[in-house]
Length: 107
Length: 116
Image 1: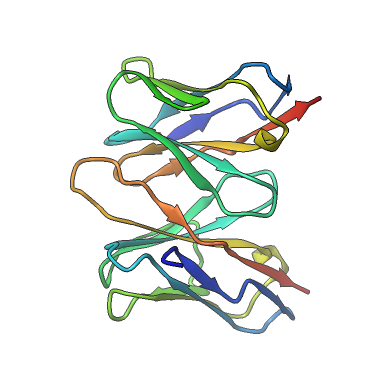
Image 2: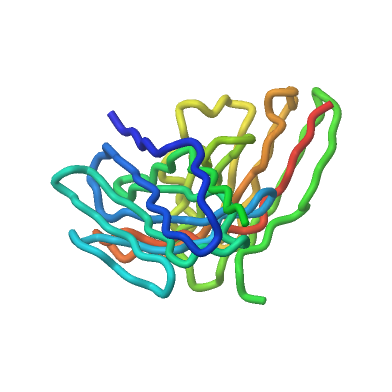
């Protein structure tokens, strides 16, 4: 079957580092996406991993292990504006989205 | 602005009425997706097009839902005989499909539907 699992909620402190994990099962896997979604807004693209390893893009990094069906999104130097839902999506014959992890950043 | 646009942004309708939403994708993109999202959930796939061809439709989608992309550019999603359970955000996304590589989807702002 096809499935995406990620934690429902996380809380972290401004300036800290947080890691959001995602496990996936999908048919014809061809990449793992992370999107950010603020309340009431559309998802916006953050990162794409197709090979194993870490991709760094500013304060955000994303990791993929295809053999384990596992990815994580790492957010450094957290800011209040990072409070949002983070959606993990596995690309394949069809892209499957997880339910999202709501991140609360507190002062 | 060359991003994905959707109209209307908000729609309130009475149960039993028909509604139609429009999506204008990024012009060079060949794929267009429709999703439905309810509170606390991720986007749920409804259907997608490659150019003007509708390649897949979710089995969760009843026959009250229909989508078209007549010239391979804009798309419309119609819901007939709306029900209160249809209340949700309807998201459109477009992408450039590069074959066997994953494609980044760019989302429009969504149409929020409320069925009374």
